[in-house]
Amino acid sequence: MTNKIYIGILLFTALTGIIFYLLYRKKKAELAEARRLYQAVHGLTRFADIMDVIVEELKAKGIDVLTYLMKKRKDHTLTNDDITIPITEYSSAVSAFFTQQPCSLNTRRLKGADKELFDKYGHVSFLPVNLGHGTPCWKTHGCNNKECKCRTLDARECWLVSDKAIPGGQMETYPDKAKRCMSCQSFSPVGVFIVRGGDISGKTRFVNETFSGILRASLLFENEAKRASLDALTGLANRRTLEAALISRYELAARYAHPLSVCMFDIDHFKQFNDTYGHQIGDVILRELATFVVSHVRKVDLVARYGGEEFTIVFPETDKNTARDVVEKIRREVESYGFAGDKKITISMGIASYPVDDSISAEDLVGKADKALYAAKENRNKVVTYSKKAEGLAKKKNNANGR
Image (cartoon, rainbow, N blue to C red; front, side, top):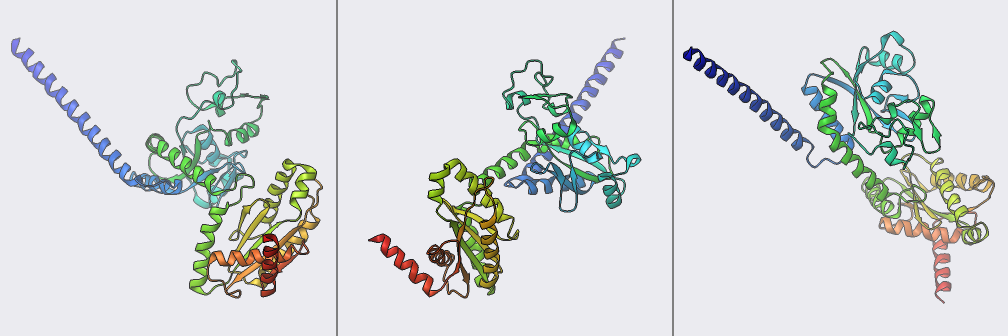
């Protein structure tokens, strides 16, 4: 009997030792993987770069990642370069995005976005990505409604609750809820991976527990960096961003002997306009003019607020005559457009170009465009290209101001 007890104790001890050893090996493997992942993302701040690391990790685990769709708050879509899915439209990708549960393409209901995805990729699955827990909905919106179904939720999934209370009323429809949630700080989903093959059931937890904090930090960093580069009122590039971009584009133009044009323009009699209508209406005019000009130039062109009511447009790969044609069209359309409802403004514009205007630096090119603007403001509501005559008028005006 005693021997049996000893044998039992020995077997129990051995079994316990094996279990602890296996747990130790598992923990050691997890730490090694965590260390490797840390090294993989160390120094990365761009959201897209971290997403690329996640793609490689999923591939290493047997998941064939075809692409991923990211949340685009401004137009309420999941999108990449090839696909755009409105979040108010039914699709398996949107379902995975909102519920934060992996799912397969619903081939029994192939229409709209699902049909497009099936035609492009065949049978695929969707792996959601989120940023981890954020601020609860009621805290974000300062809501004091104690009966709100989201009030006591530990999980930050308030967007899943039906008839969710918000300050000012109820959201009764899914599209209303979806649009509201897309810009909310409590809304943590950021996208979905489109994948094929492998067991995806456990991979959602791997992605979202391992990378959610890193993704949140990278998005915060990118948003802060973006805000620092933009003008707060108009949303255009600010002067610091303009100067850095212009130096880079000027150096490229000089290296490859390509044309580069710069337009400086401002609103005529803007001080008088502010005195008449008030600075709030003046701010509306500045914002609307910024949007108007951006819509009339190419994506490669840079529109920036230089300061006050003065703006700059940088036209890469554009000679002086072409730039003049573009800004002349803008000037004419601004003159006939009703800003802030029905108010009319005019703008004066000056253009300088490399290499025809013999500029020696990006700063010199901007200076010559500014001198052309001075000449344009002699008569106002006019486009003037840089010339020796324009420079003479600018010098004459500066001397007059100096006296």
